[in-house]
Image 1 (cartoon, one colour):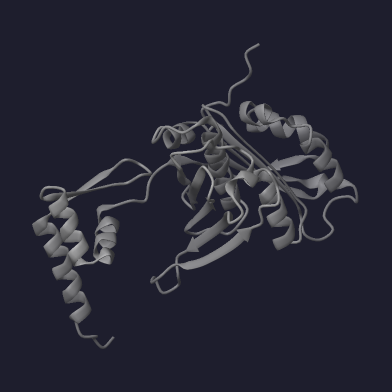
Image 2 (cartoon, rainbow, N blue to C red; image 1 turned 135 degrees about the vertical axis):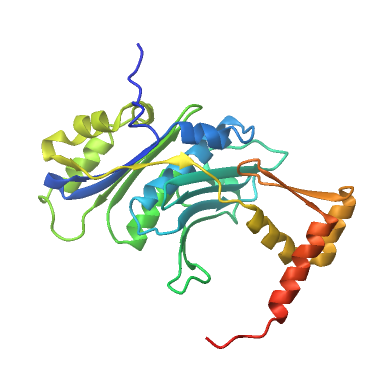
Length: 304
C-alpha cells in the first residue's frame, strides 16, 4: 500500500510545538531535498549514509531547541571504519554534512564500533557582540548508547536536567527527527510526561519519515492538545567561499602554498568536500594573497 508523502510545504521543514496538557515542548524536522543534496556529494555505504542523515536531522532539531544565532554542528570522531561524521545547521536553516571513512573496514550503525577514543560533540558558534571571533560553546556527548538518538537523549538529560526523548531516522530519500522535552516547572498534569513518552514509543522510524507533521502530531498527541509554532524552511547550502579558502591558504604559510601551485603545474586547486565547489589559484594570486597579509600585519594601529 502506498504511504502518504509529506507535502511540498511540509518537507524540508522544522516545526516547533507544545503539548499543552502534558507540559511538553517538541521539535520535528523533515529533510527531503536537503538530505538528497547532502547525500549526493559522495558515495557512502548504507550504514554511514543513515548515520549522516540522522546527524543532519539532529543538528536541525537542536537549532529549534537551543538559542542559535550562528551555526550548530554535530561532530563524531572515531578510530573505526567511520572516522568523521559532521553535520551543520545555521540559524538561517541551511544545512551541510559529510562523512569520512577509512578505506578498510565495514561501517556499522553501532556507536560502540567507533573505537575506545570516539568523541561526539555538539558545538554552537554565535556571532560576538563586537563582531570579532565568534562565541563558541561545546558540549561533549557520552557514547554509552548504541545509537545517536540514545546518546543525545543522555546528553540533554544530564546537561539540562530535563527528561528528553529523541527519535532519528534516515533512508535513501529522506531524513527526519522528533524531539520531546518536559517543560521546566510544573506545567501539565502529574502524568503528562509519562503519557507523552508512552505515545512517543509507539512511533516507528518509517512513520517518522513518511507521516506529515500534522498527521504525526494529531495521531500521537491530539488528546492533550497540540499548539504548532511558526515553522522554518530548511535547505542545503554551503558556507564555503573564495575568501575563506584564501584565509586557509594564508594559514598554511607562503612556502607551502607556493609548493602546492608548483606541484599542480602552475595552478592550485582547492575543492570543497561539502558542496564540490572548486577554487583555483595561480602563482600570481598566491603572491598577492601573502603581500596583502603582510601589509595588514605591518600596518600601524590607528587611533579610534
